[in-house]
Amino acid sequence: MAFYMFDVDGVLTDENARPDRDVVKSIEQLAKDEHILSFVTGRSRGWLSDHLFPLFDDNIDWSSLYCVSEHGAIKGRGTDISSWDLDEEYVISDEVKDKLYKVSQKEKYEGLIQWDQTKESMGTVEAVHGDPGDKEHLKKTRESLQEYADDVQSISSESGNKTAVSTYGVDVIHPDLSKKIGATWILDEIQSAEEVFVFGDSSGDMVMAVTAREHELENITFYWVGEGETPEEDKITSISSEASYAEGTKEILEKHIG
Image 1 (spheres, rainbow, N blue to C red):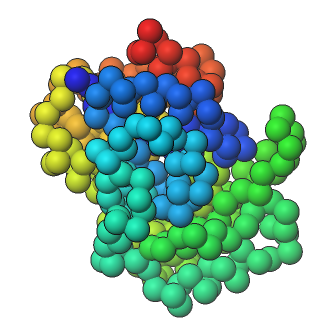
Image 2: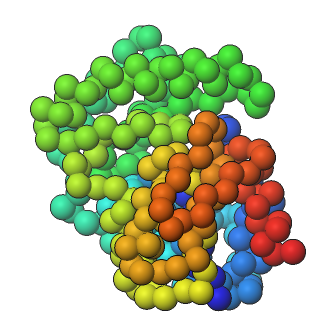
């Protein structure tokens, strides 16, 4: 029995943040084969419920699925998001969120980034996705995300928070919040696994594999489906896919399920 940890954005989705049905089918097969499955994402539980979970086969028992949203501020099992718990310790103030929102409304960001109203613990903007294959729009959104991150850095630091830039968005979050929080919760629950497979597309996703190593698990593989250089860590096997985004994940999972 193996343990799988998946980031969501850029791993289960294409470059326009659309969940990939073929990847979901592969995950369904892993569930049928009784592997331990988990999602550790910066996305909100509302987004998962609206965009990812509706693709799942209702005939499969998902009650054992471990879910971590907003980097670790929200944790739960199964697809009933109302049963998940929000840790108030990691919620930034409404005053900070209001300041971040005002920055996001600047005219220069119109049509490129937008405020994410679904987040409960953090202040987030995400890319406004263009047509599939529109590389020019994709480039502009990425530039805008970085510019926004620079614009809000003072708000973030002066309020004692931190800024995290991801594939599709920018989060201002509690300084102690990272995917390590969620990964630790899951690993404390499962305790052991014959193999560990972690899927990520940003350097911050490696912390999930590192946390598994800190729990003295062995046979850990980090699958890189992002762009650029593949992150590496001692005692963790790093393997990059030929394709990026969900296409890369699909490529890898097809080998796992045969």
